Image (cartoon, rainbow, N blue to C red; front, side, top):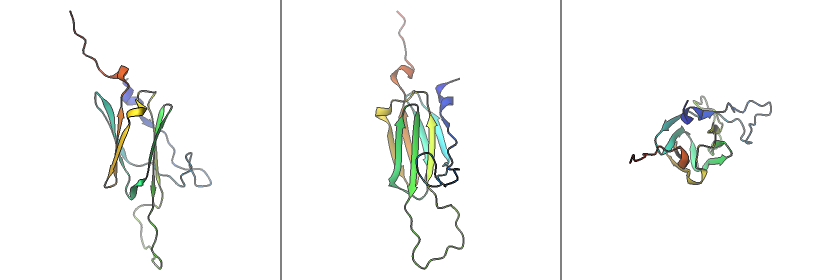
Length: 133
């Protein structure tokens, strides 16, 4: 089993009675995401519709990467919603990795509601070509 298979989400969906989840974000949903394994890094693509750059937080500590997104939309005065396709909630995704990530080199970019996070692999985990003498 490769380390790629260890990048699994925790099931933190904010199901506590008070409507909050572990990181304190009220009613957090788990967003849709994809993980790609390359020789140099793991590429994580997370869909965060309605989230601006200042509402995204990526935290790497111990053996997990936590991605949190908060929406900042407010309902206009006198406006009545007849139907909403998405709930008025933030997002939270937790990925565990067994210390396979170089946390100091993590990069993230948000464009059009899609967050792309690059999780570089530790040097010891990268494939090496060894010359035979």
